[in-house]
Amino acid sequence: MFLVDSVQAATDLDGITAVITNLLQKAGAEIVALKKWDERKLTYNIKGKSRGTYVLTYFKVTGDKIQQIEHDALLTEQIIRFLILTADHLTQADIDKPTPLMIAATLPPQPEVPQEPERPRREPGVPSIFDEPFEESESSRRSY
Image 1 (cartoon, rainbow, N blue to C red):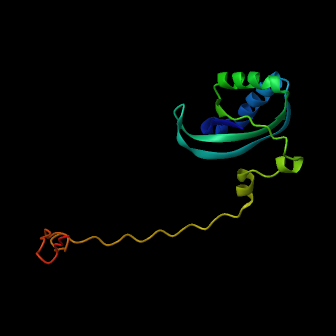
Image 2 (image 1 turned 120 degrees about the vertical axis):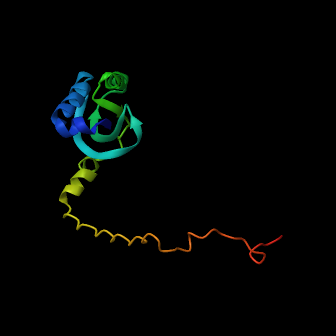
Image 3 (image 1 turned 45 degrees about the vertical axis):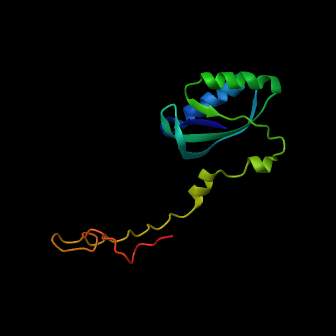
């Protein structure tokens, strides 16, 4: 999985996928699937970015090429972060499952949530119980 800048992904997703494809092909990897997973707000800023787009990529490569892929990904400006895991347990059906972005695109549009009406404000000059200072009385004090 590769994390890329959302602005770049929105303007040039084909360019981003080409960078990732070239990076993997340079290492001799066979790309099984490459798809935009989702755009999310990041928990904290990474390289000055507050939002990121995740590109989910399944590929086959020998173990000795992983270090080359990691090195090239670190040097690529378009890639903010990446995570490489083994996925030997996944079937082709698992790989082909729709991403959250694909699922959201098939859902009908949600109705707008009505906003609460603005609460009336207190008119100036009208006294309020909160305007009076709190005076502590004998009966309100407790001793333990």
